[in-house]
Length: 226
Ligand SMILES: Nc1nc2c(ncn2[C@@H]2O[C@H](COP(=O)(O)OP(=O)(O)O)[C@@H](O)[C@H]2O)c(=O)[nH]1
Ligand SMILES: [Mg+2]
Image (cartoon, rainbow, N blue to C red; front, side, top):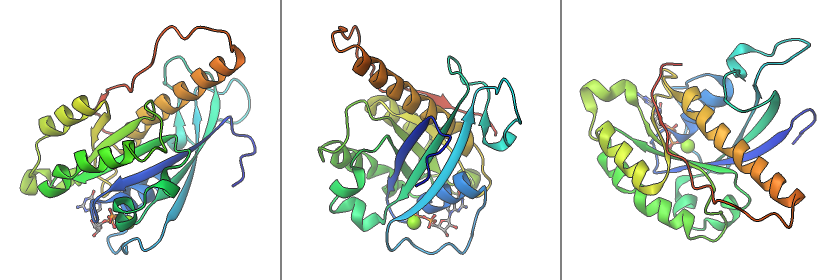
């Protein structure tokens, strides 16, 4: 993967039950598209996304759609994300190879299928105990298919929020179909990943520095139409 010109390189794994919309969220994030005929994921598929954060002082401004200008505390930088779209049966089975060196996890459920929400705790537990991720690895819990909320909702937003709070996750409801809240939710994850990376750099530069505090995963309720 070409990392030229990027300050950060992140690996993000999409997890969750089959048909919750993982591949559709990957497509929305990377191509800003929705494919109603999307086929089920048979093997690991990858998506790549470069995003620019902060305002460039000089030169051409990047594509506005990929630019987060208002992330607090961040100077201008470029982040490349490598999205790993893992087949569901693999998420349930041998997790180890996929979650190695992961910068963050996007754990998806379908707000119109209650069983997919009920499986979240179990999946999260498996991921967190597989020994491949750090306690500080951010997890974005996504309740997807929000466009169907009025007619088919089986999980309330409050339930999603409460679970995220209990598990220390970032939380968002979104729709891969309409794009509602997808970019905004990802923005919060990106910020957490950059924070983690900066803290790591800082600590490695100052070996004898006493870690004054342990940054736990942040909780953020994202709710805006982007
Ligand atoms: N209405 C609606 N359908 C969606 C959404 N996201 C995905 N789908 C549909 O749900 C099905 C499964 O999606 P897919 O991305 O393959 O799920 P995956 O198995 O988790 O990767 C497909 O028919 C998609 O078109 C969404 O946000 N809204
Ligand atoms: Mg898929």
